[in-house]
Image (cartoon, rainbow, N blue to C red; front, side, top):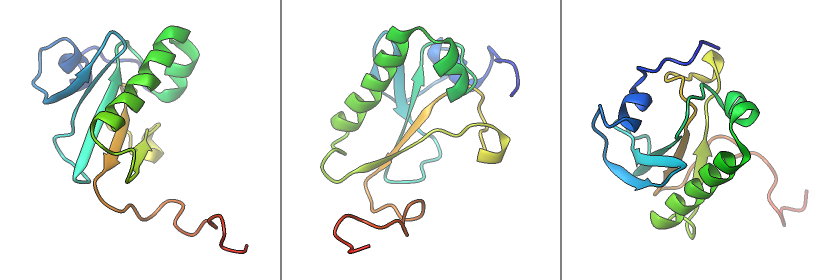
Length: 128
C-alpha cells in the first residue's frame, strides 16, 4: 500500500481545493456524488483524516471517527431514499481490488437492481 498522498483528489475535496457535488457533511465524513457513476445513485463517503485503506482506517482512526464515519454512511443512504429498495456498499482495498484513489472511502450504489456479487448465494426460503 502506498503512503498517504496529501494531494490525492479526495484530500483536495476535503480541503475545498477541488469541486464536488456534496450530499452530506459532518465532523467525521464528507459525502459527494461520484463523477463517473456506476448506478443511478452513486455517492462516495470519505472520512475526515489521512487513511489510505480500510485496514489503515480501522487500525489508526480513533473510535469516535470510526463510529461517526459509519453513522454518516447510514445517514447518507437513508437521506438518498435507499433504505427501502436497498443499496450496495463497496470499499476497494489495494491494486487487486482496483483501488485508484488511496484515501479510504465507501461507495454507496443504488437506484437499480444490483446483480453480481452474491447473486448465486442461497436466499432464506430457497430450501437449500
